[in-house]
Length: 181
Image 1 (cartoon, one colour):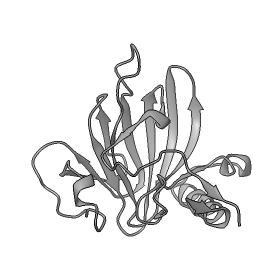
Image 2: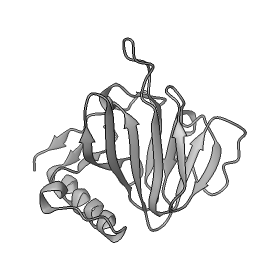
Image 3: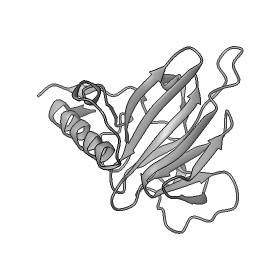
Image 4: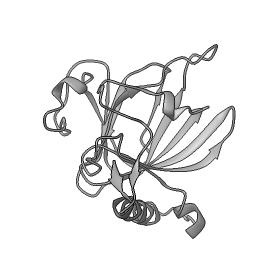
């Protein structure tokens, strides 16, 4: 859970990162940026900010912003009914992203958030810079984080059902709860 004040501050910070990356977003679009703390109440450590540009029953286009040293927790996109799950391509627009997928443990630049060692099981590190991209098959575990300076990425995917994503951390709740203060 986060407070309304924290939510609005994070929304403004994310919009600033997106604009710094060269994206033109309107004031109305800024108001739609979703701030996701995954129910952990540690937004600056584990979270992501999401601007949805397109969401239909077949495709989704989003802009993801990570604050400095912020991590989007390990997750995967499971099958839903007859659909094999979301296929997603991430393309870095600005900053550096440490992206982790299954494979040999090559974690060197990134880090696992303190006390969360059991919640981050894939450690094959891919260092991504502007114009780097990766395509994830449905069901493939992954997580990512930004170093100092933060990062902005595009997410292009088949239909997104973010509320149905699965997480290694059993304490995660995908829908952000805001405490009015």
